[in-house]
Amino acid sequence: MATTNLLLRKLERLHPLTADDRELIERHSRPLREVAIRQDLIREGDVPTDVFLILSGFACRYKMIEGGRRQIMAFFVPGDFCDFQVFILKHMDHSIGTLSRCQVVRIRRDAILEMTERPAIARAFWWASLVDAAVLREWLVNIGQRTAEERIGHLLCELLVRLQAVGFVRDNSYALPISQTDLADALGVTVVHTNRMLAVLREQGLITLDRHELLVRDVEGLKRRSGFDPNYLHLEP
Amino acid sequence: MATTNLLLRKLERLHPLTADDRELIERHSRPLREVAIRQDLIREGDVPTDVFLILSGFACRYKMIEGGRRQIMAFFVPGDFCDFQVFILKHMDHSIGTLSRCQVVRIRRDAILEMTERPAIARAFWWASLVDAAVLREWLVNIGQRTAEERIGHLLCELLVRLQAVGFVRDNSYALPISQTDLADALGVTVVHTNRMLAVLREQGLITLDRHELLVRDVEGLKRRSGFDPNYLHLEP
DNA sequence: CGTAATATTGAATGAACTCAAATTGGGTGG
DNA sequence: CCACCCAATTTGAGTTCATTCAATATTACG
Image 1 (tube, chains in turn purple, orange, cyan, yellow):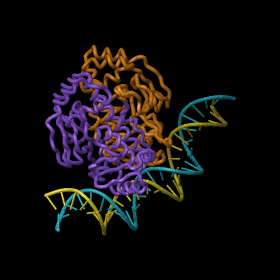
Image 2: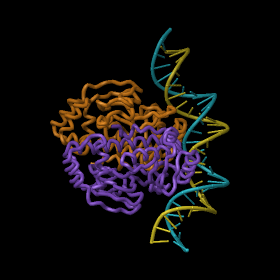
Image 3: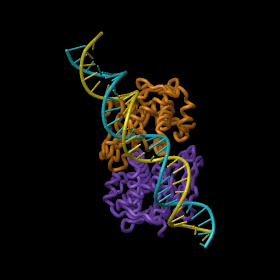
């Protein structure tokens, strides 16, 4: 059914899976669960057991520090695992929560272990987690070296490509169901400044953002301005 | 021999290995190689095959972006793998290079595969790579949310704990064989500002830094000021 | 429809940057 | 062993990007 096609679609991008593999993944990708906006799926300090698969909506990995500041370290979009490997560690060193209302599937530890006994599945999961790490590295580059305007543009480009890969983009436009505060906490800048820089991108005719619907009006221009190069997403055939 | 004790020491911190496992790792941890300062071990775009193990000196993972800016995404200290898993990806999306003269061991792809057939070794490597990812996440928090002064303090605390784990610290003092430019590129600030903030930490009596020898004069004070909490290093017994 | 959350704008402040110059240190060759 | 040179560190002054604090619109939602 449609619920898991997303994950399969992502995993099979690089290497095909056997019918058996597909069936196994389908079987464990249930039941579907609705989670409200701004709910934690796992919290820092918890003993990690299950893994979540996002089917709709946006979630994130984040950490709170003294003074109430929050850093978002990853966005999870439909088709993404929330860190299938973390359960090897004794305690979570960060939290995972929804940024919008989400449909998720909880996959239990033993299901993961069963699935990863199949070499093709193990390799696919492995690959997905390497891409996660690559994205994280690029975020570090983004925050460490680019101006606020570039950071936003870069993130919007990344989401364009990632959402394209799971079929959530139409005419260079996609749903961005999160607040500017969330964007700000992901980019290491203030909400106020995020808002101003979004305005700049709009004035330059690069994007449109209204009611959480983002339209990239000039894809090449946005990529150029923000130094975006999709290599790090490792999505080539 | 002493060359590999470092790696074994790190890997066995959590789970013991069998004599056989140890022997296998020892056998593949040769020959030792000297690499000069500021040499690349792997370069962005390369097809990754081998993995490097650092035995002495500092190396780093980094990325260059337009305009000659460099972001360092990880420091590798003695006992660290330079990313044993990356070779699953088709092309490197970043480079790895030395920051000081280093002693390294090149471990070939098939040796890694042979070693990871042993469950205990596989788990140990797996764990090490999860810790790498956890460190990367904390760096994102550091750069995204903290002031330059806190960033430096936090990094110095992290290195204190990591180097302690491999026996490179004496009396809260350790060798930091890298330039302030390297520090700056890891922290996402200018060299000039890094220099000034180091001066502030010195004036506050928290540290001493002379001839690449760092002394943390007030460990608790430095941790407190920089919001450092070692949890993310997952070094508990 | 009303109310709380989110987005937007303004003005003043501050942290970090740029550009430049001066100083120190380490290494090299005579 | 000293003189020299290049690299790294340090200091100064002016500028800029981003923040803070506040007030005002706008939107989402029950």
